[in-house]
Amino acid sequence: MKSALLIDDDPIVRKVLSNTLSAAGWAVHEARDGEEGIQAALRHRPDAVICDLLMPRCNGFQVCRSLREKAAELPGLKIIVTTHRGFATDRLNAFESGADHYLVKPILAEDILRLLEGRDAVKASPSGPPGTPAPPAQLPPGNLLRFWGVRGSIPTPGPTTVFYGGNTTCVEVRADGQLIVLDSGSGIRLLGNHLASEFKGRALELTLLLSHTHWDHIQGFPFFAPAYVANNLVRIMGYEGYRKGLESTLAVQMESNYFPIGLRQLPSSIIFSEQREMDFSIGPVRVRSIFVNHPGVCVGYRLDTSTGSIAFLPDHESYARMRLHPRAGGEKGQQTLDYCRAEDQKLIEFLRDVDVLILDAQYDEAEYQTHIGWGHSCYEDSVATALAAGVRQLCLFHHDPLHDDARISRIVAHARDLVSSHGSSMTVEAAREGLEIPLLKPKPA
Image (cartoon, rainbow, N blue to C red; front, side, top):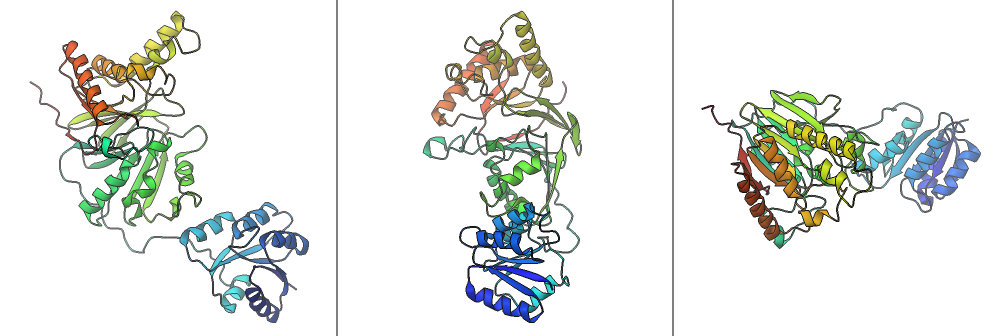
């Protein structure tokens, strides 16, 4: 005779299910909470467990995980999770915890018997609506970049950051028919709302390039409106982190402990691509990448389009400044000096003659003294790097959370003075939300 274990703190539910199963020839065991249920399962070794989701002492997710960890002692066990709530995220989490089926109360006797007898063993999963996807919307002509988030470390809303903006890193690039998003800090929420308004439900294809997965560069993705549209295609590209890949990292911040909707519940088509090569293409746009000086695995990108080039290095610290600083530890002999200069020169060559450079400039020289080795530059080094590389336009980026609008404006003014003192025509701006820069490569003389 097959046996079932009912784990539910509601005695009425236990009685109704027990009568149903007994009438169908099942031996029935009961438990009043999750802890008691786990022990009863190990003692009776039932063929099936019917477990409520929300119980004292041990919830249904925990019961599922515990019983699946003891698979050798409970071979072939079927677990049905029941609940009075119908949240999609609960359903997904139940399956991920080890449930075979998920039923929302009130439960019909026929539903339970059908599942236990294997007449409906298909596990439900979220999916988009049927039908052939509509062709993607065509972007308006013209190549440009637009800033949606320019702040480093943490969003800083408030009256003192209104002009430059308080959202973390996100830059939009439209070039040669491609929609490319650079990082998904909190600014991507504004971009997503803009795209939803502009394209009004028409299918979109876009590529999200991640420099790295520190939180201020990914925290806005759960609020990115295009990810919630079934016909949209979102490609997420970047380099694997030191512990987890891109998909795992983005999925973790959307687990139920932190967010009500899981990554795999999003109705859009999301494709992850862990990069292996440093040189690749997004449509006609050539993309080159370089590892930069920042904790973990972090890259900078250079995008070469038909009408101009963009370099995006939101997080970087000068090699020479960091390694050779009197307060920095380690050897500072000629060999170290030569190595650091070579690394800085490698970056300069990567940036050579770029039209628009978006570069980390979080500190000034005085602030840097207490931030050595944090992975961010002082703006004086950013200006020097841009000048050495022959950059046409420098956008100071990744503004420090403590820098208000007035402070950033003073930094820009001093940066322009430094450029002028070198007799250069390079233009300097501080990146600000809403700033749009057309890519109009000058015609050769």
